[in-house]
Amino acid sequence: MIQIFLAGIMQGSHLGEVLHNQDYRGRLRRILEEKFPEASIYDPLADHGNSLEYDAQRGREVFLRHNAMCAEVDVLIAFVPEASMGTAIEMWQAHQHGRLVITISPLEHNWAVRFLSDQVYRDVEAFEAALQNGQIAQLIDRHTARE
Image 1 (tube, helix red, strand yellow):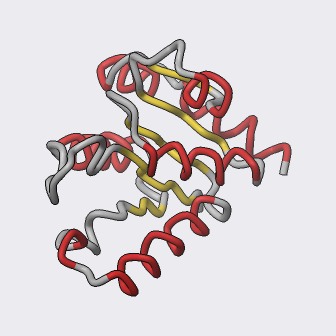
Image 2 (tube, one colour; image 1 turned 180 degrees about the vertical axis):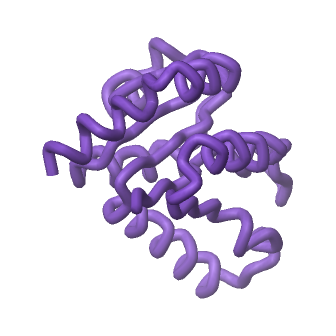
Image 3 (cartoon, one colour; image 1 turned 180 degrees about the horizontal axis):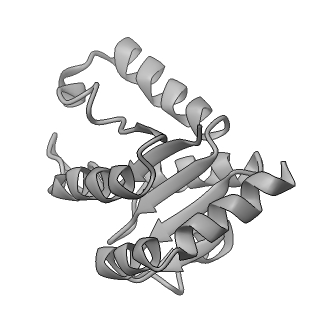
């Protein structure tokens, strides 16, 4: 069973305790579950929807645990419509530990996106097309065969 971590922008560059629209998480989860029904898909927001209310200790524990998880999963799917420090750290962790990093982002010139990703798709539609035509499954198969 493959393990997938759904990384993606949450707070981004907001100065206040505000999240970016998180609708992408449900959509990505649905299309991944359709294609990989046997996969274990972890969405960090699902278990921590009120994380902006955490005290410093709890927030630190969750942040560090999620980053550690990125080193353990098989695949990290990163949604990066604009710069996201947290997502960049998650991508780094996965990359440094030889995990497959698939990024959905228009930031093709951003070095974190460019150099930490095994594959980049410009938007969710391109990612979904790659799921449907089998490209994502091939990436996962090739990557897991190397382990």
